[in-house]
Image (spheres, rainbow, N blue to C red):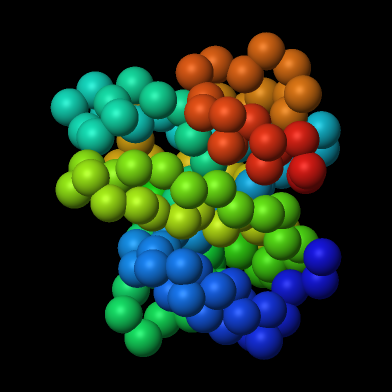
Length: 145
């Protein structure tokens, strides 16, 4: 699905109408036929889990801008375009409320070097292969990539 500011606004409004107030934007970064996975630090919420670069949408920020910002903050990579909406999934956060994660296929200016600030490891993996310790939601998003 083509990504526009209108789509981003609609997604946020739909989540809010469902009572979901914590939004996360996530980027599926590819390099040839591989996708970037990052591992949460052991002492973090859901420590040791592999995921795609993602983070909270700040107040007043749209989902697309959060996708760009979080990718840069967590990996040092610059998103040159947000290409496709890959769907969303909900999960229980550390406060016991529901978070909705919106997933987008992105293009980055360069795939390296990676500078991890919130994760302890990264790896490039086949999106349909044996994915290490990812949630079902992430697995589904990668299948749509």
